[in-house]
Length: 232
Image 1 (spheres, rainbow, N blue to C red):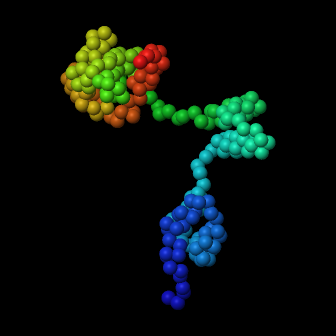
Image 2: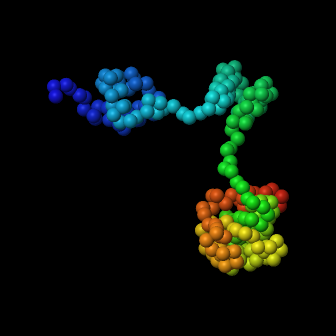
Image 3: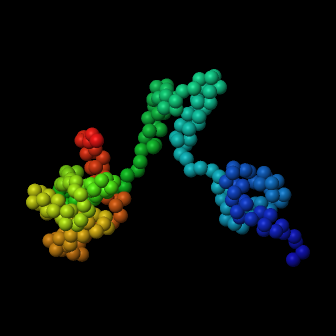
């Protein structure tokens, strides 16, 4: 072919990605690389680079809040007034509470759906090992329906027999749950074996998964810290 094409090294995918991520426009990129605007557009298409690569994903409500916050702080600085950001935000709430309420609602986390049939349908078991360097391990269990704390015990080890003892004490008091959910830690082995024997295997009697999904006992631990402050 007699048509001339600029070498790819003049406008490679890495160069284009970097320059676009810096917020530069296509004409500016063409000027920096010393190629035509048509070449830049053609290479962008060839490398499947999105033209909106440098733009952030932000809702209109959040964008309005940021612009208002930044604009007010800039005006205060121009007037020689320096105040903390939280004071600026509180002032905005006082001036326009409706807008502040809309921003707060938009920032609420979207929680995944969680449904349990009834009491003793599912117990969540988990452990806290943050104090293990001081030989303190906390194991807990909570009813997924009623949020009742079935057991919460601190010991000097992380053995499965220790968890089993706490679990059996809870069973003696509240009855046998239909299912338990635990992480893959070895300390939960005996409880899972017992549940499969008592309730049957193949029905999810012992559900094991990543500890990030077993968030109820972590919530229980946070609530317990608030109610019982330990002085060292």
